[in-house]
Length: 480
Image 1 (spheres, rainbow, N blue to C red):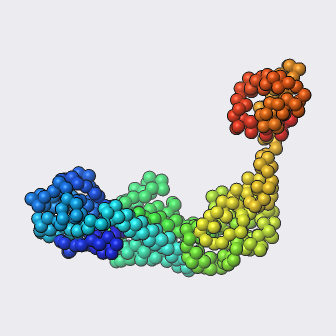
Image 2 (cartoon, rainbow, N blue to C red; image 1 turned 45 degrees about the horizontal axis):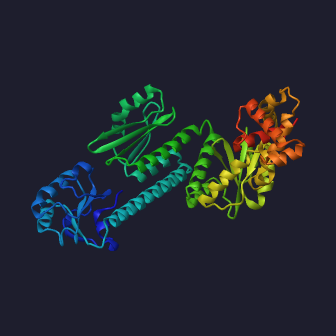
């Protein structure tokens, strides 16, 4: 929600003085617009704090100017003094008071840009709090899903989070559970035609319904049912995020009877998302409900590429969760090597450097563990990658095939000159003609001729560093 004009006007650093419209200070300020036009309204959307020095305005213009702003729905007017006007013309104060438009005086030493920055900071802070609230709500929904009541607990929690009502419906549109108000049967009957449309479509689509006093969202739960959510207010983007999180958990709950292992993976994935979002407390509480715990000290992330994730999870005595195409484990740093050896029995394993459970550290460790998997080793450590050299990361068979294809024109060349040997010497000497020619025992002009032939046969520019790098790698795997 955007900050109110009361909050903006009350910032001590801005030193704004309210002169009119005190009864409308709860209006939201969604942006600051600076304009010296006699009619700025074509460039406004509403809910702006309009700032002007009135360089084109006089007291006679006040009523029409204020009327236009009110019609456009602006949040308020800030009038800068000390430039065009020593003080706000009396006509503006009177017109704003009569129209109920908040009017604030902006002193000469308060730049308009300072007001814009202050509002921007408030908007960013509000947005951050909303996002934090959404993550916290997701954590509460996840913990509700782990309660004995399962899906019913999620429905009850969702209704409390949104301050509305929620219906959990089966695939035929019958009520499984309702929360957040009376009249569930009547609401289900009203939604029956819409649910039938979704069912007939056969696709995982959702729908939204809006009436003057109620807004409704209906989401499918796979092919096993639907959830309908209603509120007297339109759903915000954060509200939709919370609904989507609940929908995922409810879908999981419906599938758990036939796929309990898949359900467990979904819950552990939700815990990992909480950790990566910095919601450590919620993640710890959820993990406790699973009968497990996160490492208390430094941890190492294990990224496991396995064809049998369930067997791997059963083998590792630590927290595990699916992540993209991998299974990751959060192992205490002191036990990481031992657990990596256990995991290697089920596939390749990449180990990160030690990290904490802080979101930034954990994200970095997750990336490191995934990057370690670029090697073909059963157990690969991110810390060892730099010491192995670049060529150790290249698949030998693929590199030999690449080298044979790239160098084939040189091997097929019928001249007495050994172009491959000459190219090797030229690259080994970093393109220095004299040093390479001396190594080969030929004149530098002879070497220049040979390199021109190499360039012509390969169709490549030997002055290009990328071409030199490719040729050097090819010579390492196909020197003869």
